[in-house]
Image (tube, rainbow, N blue to C red; front, top):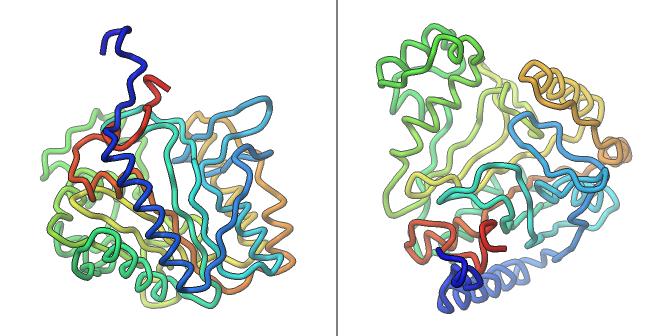
Length: 317
C-alpha cells in the first residue's frame, strides 16, 4: 500500500456491517439467557504471568491480554453470570490470523462446568455461523486419532520421534529447549490443527495437567485439566475453563509461570494479587471462555486475512 492510500480502511463497508450484526446477535443471545453485559479496564496494574502470552507495557501498567482477572473479581463480588465484548492486546507479530489489537468475547457462567459451557459455546457458534453441531473429542482421543500417541504418557523421545516422522525439522538446540508440553503444542499446531476442518467446529476438551493454565484439575486414571479449545477450518477460535477457585493453587501456578518465563529468558511478571484476594473471598463455581471475534467474522465472511474484517490494522492504525 503506497502512502497516499494508507488512510483507507482495510475492511469493506459490508464487513463493517457484518461485524455490527454479529455483535447484535451476540447481545441478543446472552440477553435471552439473562447474562449481564459488563465493562472492565483495558489498562491494568498487572499483566499475565503466562509464558506464552506477552503483554504491552504502558507507563508502568499493562494493556490487558484478556479481561479475565477483572471479570473474576466481579464474579467474586457476586455479580453473577456475565459477558463482555472488548479489545485485547497481545505482543505478537501481525499476520493473516493475528493483529496485536483484537476483539474478544469473554463470558462466565455461574454453576456451569466446562462441559456445560461447551454446550452453550456450540449453540452460540451454530447461531452465529449457521453451521451444524460441533464435533467433540478429548485431547487424548485427538492425539490417538491423528498421531497414535497417548499425550498423557508419551515420553519426550516419543514426541520427538513423532515430530521427525511428520517432517518437523528443528535444530538440535531448539529441540533441546522444548519440554514435553512444548512438543505436544508443536505437534498440535503443525500437524493436528490443520486437519481440524470441515463444515462444523471442533471442540477439544480435557487437556494434560501441564496445560491447565487457570483451569481445575480433574482426577482419573490420567488426571486432566478441565479446559477446552474450539477450532474451525484449522483456526483456533476459543479457549475455555472450568475455573480454578483455589487461591493457594493459583499462587503456585503464578510462581510456576514465572519460573518458566525466567528459564526462557523472558521478564518475570509480578502476579495480580487482587485476583488472588478475590479468590480468597470466594469465586463461585463457574466456567468461562474467551472467543476471538475477528477470527469468527473471518469464518463468517469466508475471507483469508484478518485485515479484511478490521477497519484498520496495526500497519495503518
